[in-house]
Length: 147
Image (cartoon, helix red, strand yellow):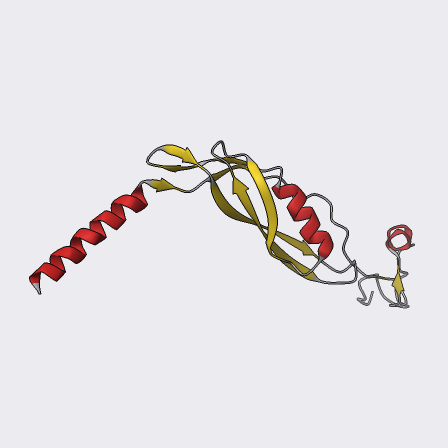
């Protein structure tokens, strides 16, 4: 029984030493997602994960969608942007090694703002910005209070 406990302690120490010797690759520069055309009538907050293979110098050798956002345009933009990122390579015992990393992009888009005219009906933004002020109601100021 005592030998088993000592063996487990020794294995734990070896595992900790091996883990400490590995340092994951780090993002040096994250490329922006850029312009993405999406349906303007749709509320969305989509996240796409991209997996990148890096060589010993931290250069990207391969890129692929690891988890799709569900929108082809967002996925394509994320893949293009991810290929422009810069990395510090992973190391093992202080020596650079090839590795694989995952990064993600989240795109948030919101429905177009709806502008309402004086009659309460929707108008386009240009008309709303150049519209005449709403006249005051009879017998009151523009804020609706009586004089």
